[in-house]
Image (cartoon, rainbow, N blue to C red):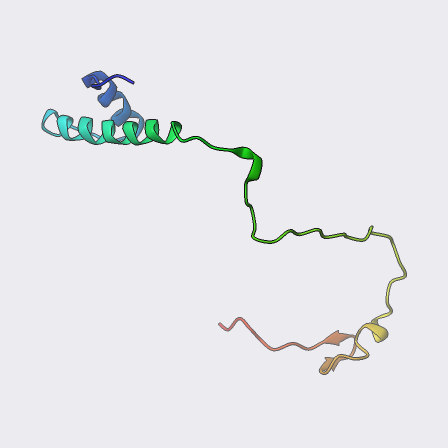
Length: 98
């Protein structure tokens, strides 16, 4: 990567970011942008071994059953064991208040 950013490159990045900068701010933005580019360059140099990436501390071998259509419950059977019901409906506590 080049050691110095040109004024045109800094203005171009500012235009893309929709930032209006004047000549007094240009050098400050040039320095900060160069620091960001240097950090990205250093990150690209990190050696990554993709063989043993740890996604989670335990293995999840979840065996899911196949979905199969079954017999639909009757409304009276669905609410049979509900603690609070009204006809064919299950009453639940109000969670959202006005």
